[in-house]
Structure formats: structure tokens, C-alpha cells
Amino acid sequence: MCGICGELRLDSRQPDLGLLNNMLAQIARRGPDHSGSYSDGPLALGHRRLSVIDLSERANQPMVDPELGLAMVFNGAIYNYPELRKELQGKGYQFFSSGDSEVILKAFHAWGEQCVARLHGMFAFAIWDLRKKTLFLARDRMGIKPLYFTQNSHTFRFASNTQALLCARDVDTSIDPLALHNQLTLHAVVPAPRTILTGIRKLEPGTSMTINLKGEVVRQHYWQLNAQRPALVRSESEWIEAIHDALRLAVKRRVEIADVPVGVLLSGGLDSSLLVALLAEAGVSDLRTFSIGFDDIGDEAGSEFEYSDRVVERYGTQHQKYHIANSSVLPRLSEAVDCMAEPMVGQDAVAFYLLSEQVSQDVRVVQSGQGADELFAGYFWYPEMQAEKGSHLERFRKHYFDRSHDELMAAVCQQYQGADHTSELVADHLASPGADEFLDQVLRFDVSTLIVDDPVKRVDNMTMAWGLEARVPFLDHELVELAMQMPPQMKLKSGGKHPLKEIARAILPREIIDRPKGYFPMPALKYVQGEFLDFMRDILNSQASRERGLFKRVYIDKLLASPEAHFTQLRGSKLWHSALLEFWLQRNVDNARR
Image (cartoon, rainbow, N blue to C red; front, side, top):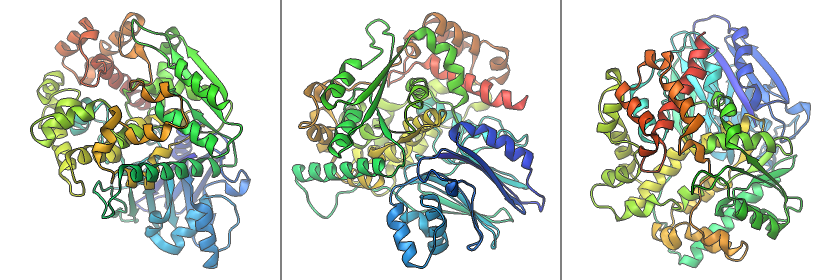
């Protein structure tokens, strides 16, 4: 797991190596073990390494193969690399390292851009062809690993985060009005290829691109998620058995392909608890688990220790739990925001940041339960949408959007007024072919698009801020493909996530399985009061905020007057959403411009 960056000049000039070093500094936290750079004519590559597979110097990057005429920087983990290595050796390729990085280089030489379809794992990488003078970039199917880029008439740059790209002074940092509409409607999700900044884009999941010295770009979408019933009819028990087998394999792959110990971020919910049980079943004897909790606010619990403790007791894990006082959160908030590649309003972003700081002192790799709720209909809004009347868009919008279009237009200033961009985007996604039923459309949209730029991105950014690799078995693409074929009615049973609950019956305490769905708790960012309210008031009343002119003052004043009266459909604080966006822009854009 690593950080990558690079620059390709399109104007016959040499890359700015000073800029490359500045970019490397902005991704340094992602890879504390080694820093490397490489240049060849118009191209410069940078890499920060977190050593997880093949810990030797032979696996350092940028990785160059002079014989093949290729150079690469890679972020991620390829779980089927041993099988691919054997296949490539059968074709006559010889290897100088023992990890997954070199396998990608050889695979690209052997199969060209089609190599990505053979890779099983999470990845973002760039390969420079020294002979053709072309740059090839690719991102994994589920978008687990980030890949941002900028392009103008004279240069193309890419990086693992936006902060690295903002090192250059020629990036257009104006707010993209369409992205702002998404940001304030879809809980800070701005689907690829856009970001909140006009001049920065991100490669879509399941996509590769090739760029030449003329700046010509060719994109290829190498994977698409379908949600249709298979020709083979399965009974419910057969479906659950197939899901169980696929999940076992996904968990096993993510613990075996590592040359360092692997732990689990244990929230106490069904998903992470199930990972612990399956790892124990796979024979992991020294399993390490980690939990975090915060102060309660009113009736809102700040931790789920009572549940995680029961899993620990059952499986005898080496467990550490951390209680963070609310008074300790605010002083660390700016650190977490500085590590967000894009503005993230999810309360658990800060929690993951603080937890990862502690966990990284014990292990380098953890498994995490992201994706289970979206795959298996675990959230409360899925049955509500299913029961709703109206068009597919109306059913989705009523139970998911943070704000109606009219409310959003009443909130933002004139220059950001426009069409209902988010409704158009959602309608297009839901209507795209390859989904049998309405809930199939919703879950496919959630899994392929929404979670990429919400929980998945949060986990990547917050763990990698401490050089900690997070692996997400529920987003194994083969498991995802299987689960999306399953009839949604089976998922909705038992209050949602029926298949996972049935799998868990024999291996987890009943209290873990049958309790109401919990959420990673961070009450202080939901019920905004005291010093947190003062903090958000200062941000939104600051000179920078007023000069930026995102929000109308009457809207901000209304939120500040009664913050606990303004929640989204999904119970998020509209005040926190507004303050976080402005704070992120101040910390990451305004500071970079100074």
C-alpha cells in the first residue's frame, strides 16, 4: 500500500522535479518506508512505499524493467499475484522480486491494457512505456484505491490525493457547480470523474486510460456491475451457501497475501464481527482486533464496546479498545481534514483517523467491514424506498437526498444556481441497463458509485494517513458480482442483511446478529453544541467563508440558530455538512494557494 504521483509534459519541456518532490511530500504519510523517483524525458514518477508484500528493497518503486522498457508506480494489493506470476513464468518472463508489483509490469507487457481484467484486488497504478512514450493508468473495479489527475495544454499530472496536485500553481481551484450540487445532496459524494474543484478529476472505478505526448486520452471501461438474476435458479439456502463460500475466500485471500500481521477494525456490528469469526475459522491464531468509542451525548451512545467485547470473549483475540473523550476530538479535527482528499462529512471519518493512529502502532494491515450494508440491503432506507410509490427517481430521492433541489437553491449563492444535476445523475444511473428490479438498481448504484466516494474513500484516506493498509473483503469483486445477482427480497428479510445473519448464526453471539443496525458513533458531530458549535460558527462566519460566497448568509444563520433542528433524511447534521465543506476548502485549497 502506497502513494503515487507523476507528471507527463505535453509541451516538450522537462518535468519539474522540484514540484515532484513537493508532491511526494503530500503523499508521504501513505508510505513511510521508502521514497523514490524516476524520470525519462517528459515523464517523472514518484512513489512512497508502505511495505506489506515482499519487504525487500527489490520491491521498491518506481519499479523499472529496462528489458521490457517499462516503469511503474503502484498503490494497492493484488491477491491473485502468485497465480499470475506462475502463468507469466510459463510464458518465459523472469522475475527479480517476489511481490505483486512486478507481476503487474509483466502482465502489462504480456497482455497490454487488457491486463487489468486479470488483476484481482485493489489498485491504482501508472505504467510508462519508454518506447512508445505513452502513460497507462488504471483503477480497480470497486474504486478502493484513489487516482486523481489534472490536465491542461502543457502537462498531465496524477496522484493518490488532491493535496499533491494542489502543489502546482496552475490548477483551477474554482468550485464546480455540478459537483457542489452532488456534494450537498448525496452526503458529500461527488461521483467520478468530477471533484468539488473544477481543475481536478478522478479516474472512474473499473476504468483505465492511456495518454500520449499530444495529450490525447483513450479511456476503457473494463468492468461493469450487473444486477440481474442468473440463468441458474438457486434456492435461498443455496444462495446463502454460495455467499458464505465467496466471503470465506475473500477473507482468506486478504489475510494470506501479506508478509506482515493482519488485524481487524472491530466496531461490534455484524459485519466486522463476522470478519473476526471467519478469520478464526480460517485458522488465524493470533488475531488482533481494535475498537474505538467516544463520550455519549444524551441518549446517543458513543461506543459499542459492549458488543465488541462479546466477540473478543468468544474468539480470544488480542484486543485493544480506545476511548476518546469528546474534548480530545476538536483539537485533532484539523489533522483529519488535512488528510481528506475530498470533503467528507461522515462522522466516522474522524473516528477512523483517531483509531488508525493507534492501530498503526501494532499492525500494518487491517480488514474492515465496508460494503456489507450496501451489498445486502442493511440500511433502513432500502425497505422504505421499496415500499414507496412513484417513479424510481422519486422513490430514491425521498428517502436519500440530503436536501431537495429547491432547498439547495435557497442555500447556495447565485453563481451556483442551476439545474437539478443530482436528480439527473441518479435517474441516469438507475435507468441504465443490467438491473432486474428497482432495488437491484438502487443497490447497484450504491455499490458501484456512492460508497466509492463515501465509506470506501473515508477508510482509505484515514487509515493511509497513518501508513495503515485497510482491506475490505465485502468488496471483493467476485463476491460483489455474486451478491448483486441475489434476489433483493432475500436480502431484506430479517430486517436486512438476511444472508449475513444466517451465516453468522452458528459463529457469533445472538446479541450481535439480532440487535438493531448500529452506526460508527461520533455524537459530537451530529448533535452540535458547546465548543463544537462555536468551532463551526467561527468557520462559517470567517472572512474566508464570506469572501468565498458558497452559502447565502440567511441559510447559515438559520443553521447556526438551531443546529439540532436541521437534519438530513439520513440524520446527518446540515450545519456540520456546511462547516466541513468550508473548513476543507480553507485547510486544503486556501492554504495551498498561500
